[in-house]
Image (cartoon, rainbow, N blue to C red):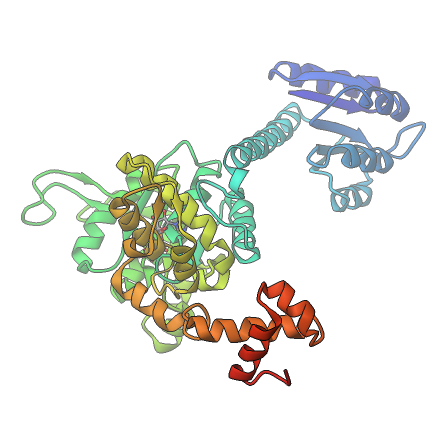
Length: 447
Ligand SMILES: Nc1ncnc2c1ncn2[C@@H]1O[C@H](COP(=O)(O)OP(=O)(O)OP(=O)(O)O)[C@@H](O)[C@H]1O
Ligand SMILES: [Mg+2]
């Protein structure tokens, strides 16, 4: 990775060059601003060290110019001994960090490494987004509506920050997918993603699953067992249905979050824990806190950032996109020819209200692709209750009698032509006398 150093003190430049070249960076240095800016016109430096006080220009100007040509540049400001205020301004203007003279070898190395990591991660993310972004999605996440795009943006942002996250959203909206996406785009992506469902277990079982146990700690514990938290070392733990966790267990979890340590059941040796927690719930946890069924302190520990995922009815525009996505998915899975959907079937699906959100839509399409005979999914391939619903949905719209349709259409044409009967009969393709008769029949104006 290329690094530029802009400082009028050559000794300082050489020092940085020596340290960073030892770390595999490619370093060029410049003793004034102009020679650097000239080089910048045909070269690209993801990391720059800039001295604020240069003979020919202010370091801030250089910083602004570099940012303008490449927004994601990692700029490290070099300051003299006493000019920390200038550095603060620089950081506000988008510098990454500052380093004061005389530099320590270790600090130079550390800052450059950090900057490199950040840039690599950004690039990885961009590549990922480009690969998957054709349908406006991350990680197989489909959706282009503003509501889901907002959620995507949060997911991307929070992925880079190593904080706990709470996903609060209805059933089937993609909470687990979101958690996985955060993990995959985070610096922890090379380590495990472990999901645990907090509902439906006794406290003892949860403890043993999460913390593991020592051999002989209870009857039946014939061997030492490594718990989920321990096995996720360096990775991400997804606590699904956190709202279902028994209160006694919540205390234990709080302790883990605070101390970053666990004890295996029956164990006495603390084990250090390096994991990120993402919790999910379809309950309103704040209300649970008020009702006393969820610990407030645990709520605040988990809820550093909340991400809400929209209900499918809040992003109806995405329904056709999701349908296409799922048809393709199940066409490949079932090895079928079905790659389309008829207009009528699509209409029905557009009008339904999906209490089970994306998961429900996915199930409907899976079933339809399995049942479909030809190229297209037909109304008959949809579940019976949806077809029935369609009858009421379309009442007064698509399910009109020919007579009503004829009446409406004639009225519309008369309206458009400003009640010009001759013109209307020509447009309608019927003799003028027929038009008169119909007008009389339907009570449309004066023939
Ligand atoms: N935006 C999306 N694009 C594509 N598929 C999606 C999207 N959102 C959800 N899905 C699919 O819908 C299904 C449900 O998603 P997921 O399991 O992540 O939801 P959930 O919120 O965890 O649901 P539950 O509350 O029922 O546990 C999955 O099969 C997932 O692949
Ligand atoms: Mg889930």
